[in-house]
Length: 154
Image (tube, rainbow, N blue to C red; front, side, top):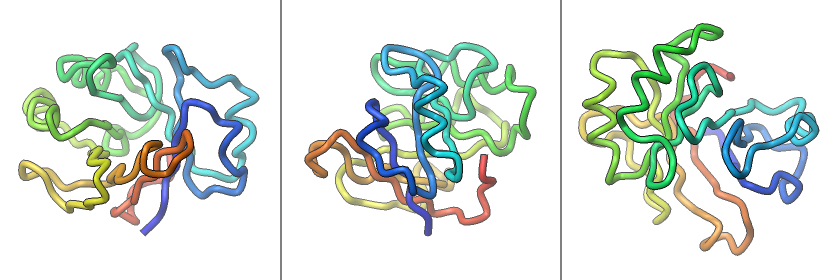
């Protein structure tokens, strides 16, 4: 198992993390300098609004992209293998995302934020689980367990 940390304030993270998640657009978009702080980390670049061709992960939750954005975003990515793309969503949106994505091959990053780490949800294998958030960790960091050790380092 690997660990992924993400935050809206990258300066709070140690620079020696294995996997880091940050934002490519929206109110908390990271700068080039923010990303440069993590040269050795697998970088999960999160798109919060479904802008075509942006990021290797789509954030589908209230106030961000919708389940309907997921297939449009996915189909717009042409710079990396489609099967390596990640969609982050909470339990309340996961069914709608699965339905919207149809037969497309993608990875699920599920938010539970209750410490649980399910392997599957609604018949979909879970690649990563955001199990603890800033409220539990008492700092502006979210912690995810990456369950699929074969998932490409993007």
